Length: 208
Image (cartoon, rainbow, N blue to C red; front, side, top):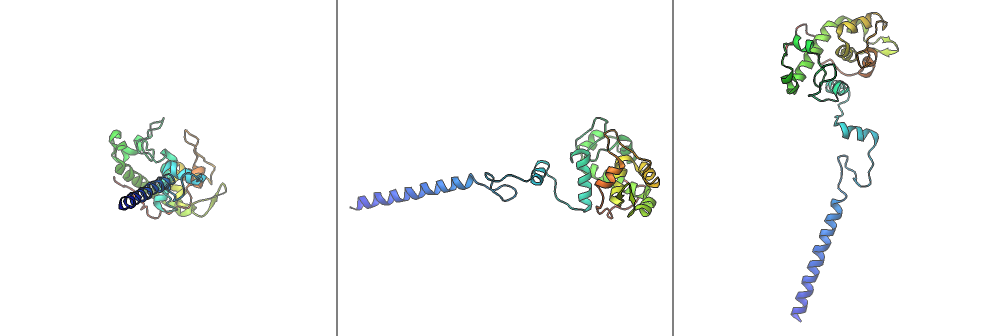
């Protein structure tokens, strides 16, 4: 009689163990994704897919939001990129611009994210100094149906150079500019409007 009870107890334990493993396997097959939803039954929205594919943080209208949005437009945010015209890095610098900041080793530049970030800050500071009067005169006005903002001006200067942006603003949008890929001052002023770039200090001779 005791032998039968012992065998029955062992059988009960084995059944519980088997059920436990089955439950764990079922839970693992329905694990949650980065959005906290079920992977099997969930279809990501267009916005979620975009964020998942490109790993873009949501930074709003902050300065970090400005520079990351601009970087994504330039290179998809990749530090090692060199385009077909020889522009380099996350923010697509020309060699002559880099030389202005005494950066001559482009191989080292492409391998050094910190240097690229410092160069971007320096260029923003320089452009803000060059365009300081135009920023003061133009922000809040409408040109070609687009409200002018400081961040839009600085983004356009990154694309076309401060001199071309100055011509555009002072001609009320008549003197336009497009780069080799067809991107225009007008497009950049609109696309990058409304970011907080007050963090950038105007500097005539910024260093890296």
